[in-house]
Image (cartoon, rainbow, N blue to C red):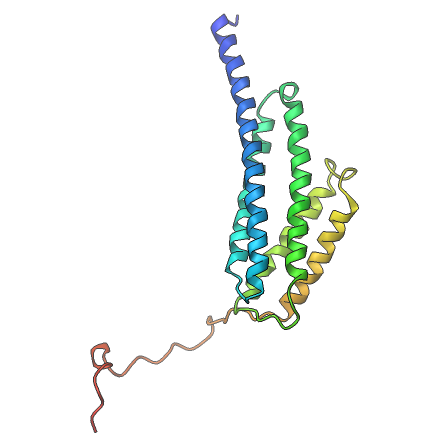
Length: 199
């Protein structure tokens, strides 16, 4: 037999779960606004051959993805009938933010000049984006979104992947020291390096 107190506790838990999901959705919206700002800054900095702001943008995108995963877990943990409206909002936001982020990535790489000076390690910087594009495409073509995703989003994914491949093809990679011989040991002690050398 369920007591009134137990019923009240379960009701509180359901309401609490709903409020948590609403808070996560609001956080996603804020993070998306921040990601858009960082994408614009990365685009501007690229004109000066600076790429560190792209890392800031990518970290923000990873935060958004983690937040999406957490939100989906919370949605699955609460009675479906009580969260149907929030699930619909989650899926709408998922498609909207995916579209925005994909377009931001396409704009970034399409704005890269053929004579763009790329830093050492640019290949390792951009290669993860290809895996991310594959994962995004697979998710959008899955049962949940297959008949709802706009064709231009898939076109943006394909175009961005091709742009990244072209960039990687001419990008310098990090040097590999794994098979290099050990550097020779210095013959002078550190304390003598600042002294003038006498004949």
